[in-house]
Amino acid sequence: EAGVAQSPRYKIIEKRQSVAFWCNPISGHATLYWYQQILGQGPKLLIQFQNNGVVDDSQLPKDRFSAERLKGVDSTLKIQPAKLEDSAVYLCASSLDLAGGRYSGNTIYFGEGSWLTVV
Amino acid sequence: EDQVTQSPEALRLQEGESSSLNCSYTVSGLRGLFWYRQDPGKGPEFLFTLYSAGEEKEKERLKATLTKKESFLHITAPKPEDSATYLCAVQAGNAGNMLTFGGGTRLMVKP
View 1: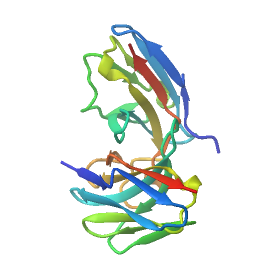
View 2 (view 1 turned 135 degrees about the vertical axis):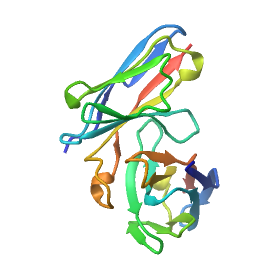
View 3 (view 1 turned 180 degrees about the vertical axis):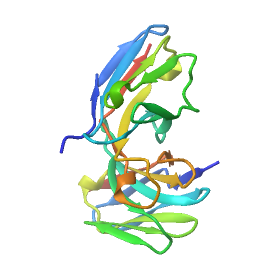
């Protein structure tokens, strides 16, 4: 089974420039997440989609970050304009569904990440 | 607010020297506690999910346990290939499926 696909893997940009990251989740997974991981820290949720609707974007800096999930499959995360503190790994993840209860469908699987350096 | 604290931040072991990693948490209604392994330059790789106090799960040299306040990841007779960052995360019952992560424990196993 193919995992979560992300691109590009690495990106270096100057501050105030823009960048976009793409994610393709595991086939059939309804829920998609974008996490930000700063070096030496655990991942922090930016935004969560179920199908093509936003479930939680409370920690997304909306003045510069935007994300969309058209047609409920692929997703794009954009940063414009970038700041130095945006240097991080942007991890896309997916899970089967948002149903309650305790079962393997709640497991979240991560992609390899997109590494962003802002100079 | 859900909180997860992992200790120690870094751990150096000799090959074969068993030890434990700690994950302390506070959460409103635990749905699940997750352990992930992260190698340098890679995304987190799922290891275990624990759902209730007293539960244990094993995979090769790793065993995860859960109490009402903390989880332990026990590593028995580690090998150099077990070197990685181990991340703990909680999933709350009132927060959909989102995970709140700890800062991780960087494990280095020397031959």
